[in-house]
Length: 377
Image 1: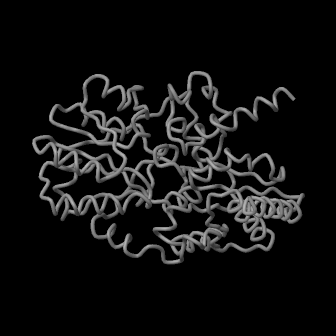
Image 2: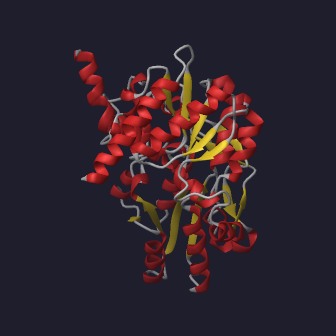
Image 3: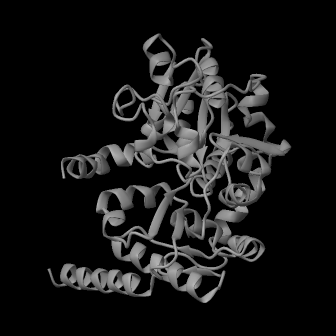
């Protein structure tokens, strides 16, 4: 009880400080680059209590959301092969492909698709079915890449000849760089950003050092923040102070979990197994150079794209869906005409409504009730 009161007191003090220090004559536009932050902002109603001139912008911080429809199509075609068992995380099951088909609907039509909770689940399935081609659908930012690397080492150690990985791991700093600089992003529309709320889980792996060149090159402050309301209020206050003082540094609010150098052991595991792709497509951002990972040649026997000669065919998103613009921060979930009508968590049209970290899913769960109250008022 005492701890709860202490936290509430500090949140109130942080909020008062933001209100006092935010210059009423200017706008503060901060992008949170983590789906967990987006979820927390909606859940705790932080946007409602911040000053009107301090705006939080949702970024492409949900790995399920940024995966393009073409990669879902590839996974569906792979799963429909009679010899293949595809292992996927649960929030990927309902992401729609280019024709509205999902892995869940493919499973309903007979594809052998298994939902797993960890990489070790996929290893166990491969051990129990040595005559099946077991493929793990690997996805995520730098946070989930080390477990995939360890899984590949374990598969090699266990001599799992019929096991492979469909790799879709992507890198956060490359996407941040693309949002700030890419001419393609400027052409399709982007929003002005004064600073970034840096991702927390990603930063436990890569540390704060990779963001330093971004802050220096583009003159944008970056603050790594935790997920508690107090964490985020403190981080927003740190960003406001940097903007007021004309600074553009990388600061670490989440110092209890994040260091400058990050987790060296995890970084070594990843660098031993993976290498950079020349480019990788992100939903809403297009082709982003050096933003994706693939298996090194030494581990080519575990690369599903090579084993099954998989080819990616780029496809356009549903023209009525605003998921791409939402991921760039140009639009909010309520700006999409499909939100809450034909697009719901049960029947999603875009990926932002699927994952719990997606901006649309977070607003559906928490924000739409506040919208209703505002409309009534």
